[in-house]
Image (cartoon, rainbow, N blue to C red; front, side, top):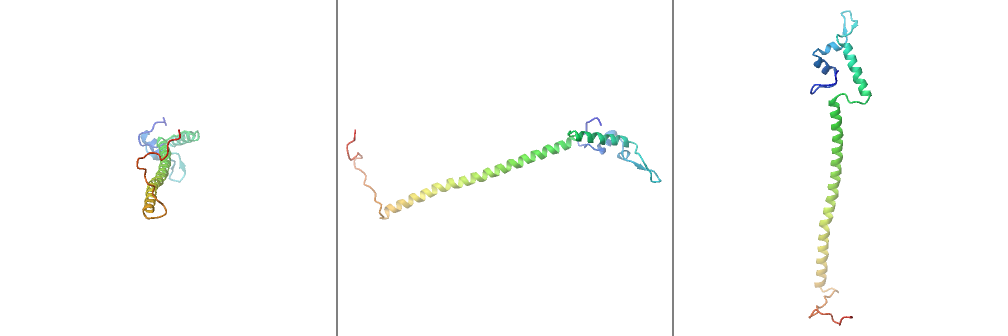
Length: 142
């Protein structure tokens, strides 16, 4: 009841009995041979212990360090699940962007090839002759 628990212990009568060095059965009521109830040897301690634990729980304090750890791990698990879901969504978006980035140059290449075939295929498009001396056909305006 001092507030410290042994490693691996819970806030329970079993741990209290182990720390006190007594059997658990001493914390519970007994029956006489005629069937009438009588208090256990340490029943008053068990009731005080349970009352104190209940008061601490009502005050919002975490009495059992194992329970505090469980709650912390649950919160951490939820945070990790949220982060994984966010990452999955980002991966999905980037995969779509990658597909688009790959398909655009391929489509542009196909369009260039189609236009080249159209030029060489004798269609209505003619290639302009290149100037022999690479000068402007007229004098500059300046």
